Image (cartoon, rainbow, N blue to C red; front, side):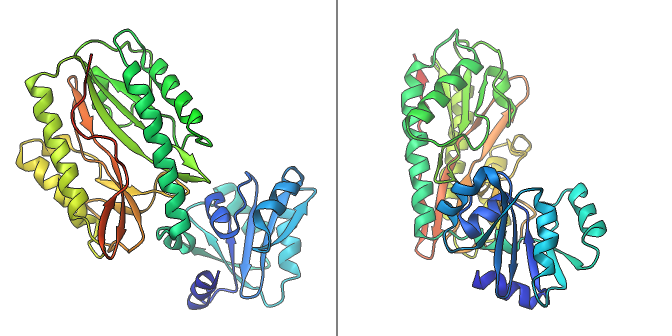
Length: 354
């Protein structure tokens, strides 16, 4: 809260309106689906509705003053702002506010001066404290437990959707609160689609099977990818897999606090390009994870921001060849002044599943 208020003072703002639900949760602990949060130099007021009257008291405690609105939150916001002395210039989260809600600011909230802000809370969220890191580590344990349970069940004849169901069943059994994103199961030629949705394709002998999934513990996410072969891998499959595995190893070991996202990305990208597959690695190397599965920082070719100590990032190089298939190996890595620590432990060796 002190850091947010310092940011408001530097930006010459009297208040910040927080509309992003992950940001609301980060600041107050509230995990409901309907909330507006106003932060000033003296006050922190959370508006929600009757459905969350009990939950909000349990989760928020003294982190904010809670108001339960009987009509709608925006009407409550205008009332709340009217009684806040000295509040004239208010920042809003430009990345998260819909055009419809921005129109509310211009029409119903016209008595105040609205200023766009970017990443006020997200910058703080990028650096994890010990408690947050513990939640992420628990989410990794859950995900890897589910993967260990699922891999022996992979066989020709299952559909991708059936595999996703098996995996997600084991994620729930392991304690995952929900799924941070729909689990990706891509087989055969479809493994060349980096964000393929699980479909009705039937797994066949000789297929790559790519699983990209995560778990959630206390709101915090893990994000893991492993690629398998059903049966014996061909020489070509083994060559591509080995290149991706080495790119993953190099990047996970080289990433450092103070390195730019661009420089981190270049470690894996340069290795893959040197082996003739540069055009087949089209996405960025990785991203931060936390309350959202994609958050700051980014490890990408265009990012010049230095990586801060305390961040947790994914390292996920891949090679994708249309009509043939693809390989991605994704780990979660914690960055500290002492160097990188790979949090995921599931084997990166090529698994040929009988």
